[in-house]
Structures are given as C-alpha cells and as structure tokens.
Image (cartoon, rainbow, N blue to C red):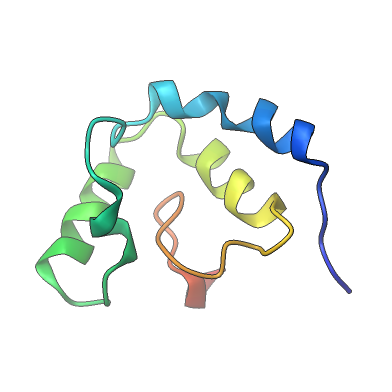
Length: 79
C-alpha cells in the first residue's frame, strides 16, 4: 500500500510553513541523529509551534512519507 497525495494538494498543505516556529531556521537541524544537540534543538522548536499538526500531516501525506527528518516533533522512527 502506497500513500499518495496529488502535488497540488501537497502545495496547498504547505501554507502552514509561514506560521512555523522554525521558519527562519535552517533545515539541517531537523535531519540529525537522535540525542545530538541539534536534534534536541529541533524538537524545542516543535514543542512551541502553532502548526505542529499541519507539519506532521504534510510529512505523512507525501508520496514518500518523508522518511527522513523531524516533522511535527516526530522523528521517522516514531511515524
């Protein structure tokens, strides 16, 4: 079973990014190993983010399931 959402729907779903707590932060910290300072910093952005649910929904709705990185405060192994 493969999840698939049309590209136009994914684009509409990404409007939440303008409201994300991490919008002015580089993305590299969201693609680090668990237990590293950058990983913990990434999670701290997610803890206070107003669009955390939208971020996670975006990650899980994509065709690839966004297998890497923290989205909505959740790591790939937790999704």
